[in-house]
Image (tube, rainbow, N blue to C red; front, side, top):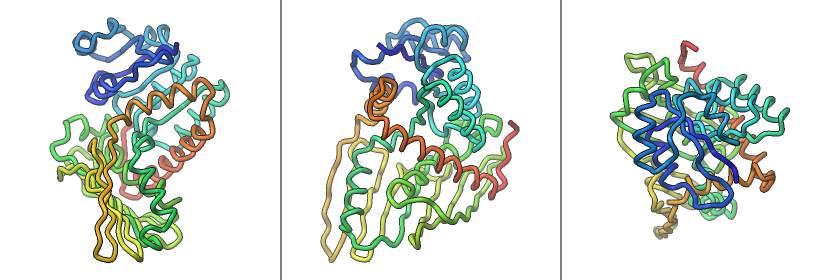
Length: 315
């Protein structure tokens, strides 16, 4: 049984706990948060073991760590966990800086440990379906992809520069992943951003290309949508109006005919944990390597965008 330690007690951890798989492979054994009282209330609510009072104590009571703290802490927690011999599942973005991810991968590989970014779109059945449709030219030759994600009224910490906040790293990582996964490597990047008074970007738009295929990717703290994905081809379009809902409708429009397919994607967090467990046990390692490559590409892109829009963090 893999003993999992959790860092954080926010809304994403709540979703993780609610969807945690009933499995004899992995179980939550410890939880740590900087605010002990908050962690205690969280553990009581979800009938988890009493939280630990320090990160060091967490490491003593787990085999693997799930990091769901503020963006600015991901690198340090991941590095210390790996150095202590723990496998790591880290919320996106796994790192802000490209060189930090390179270091984490080097440490993980030197110790034969698993390091995974918790990019939930990997386990979305909808994305696998759309990738299949593109491969089989359901809408002809692909011309472009448009993906946007907005969340108005974001929690204050998402707008704090010192926490690594901003639309790029909180939201735009999803449209970037969509282009990488469905279309291919990104060759050209041109990014623009509007900034909030705290110094973080609250609206970012990125134009990209792959072998002539154009991508328009955006994220905003000023609109409130669950995200729309549209792929335009020479014979029609594929649209997912809301890519983060449980029921993901896929609309295929061509020759005045509309086809609707609905996938139930409520198990994305559950599958993510089970896949992490499989990697630790030496299963599905080809997929693990592919996920690692995607994380490397994603961080390379966000780091370039960060530099283009002059987003500077104090860490």
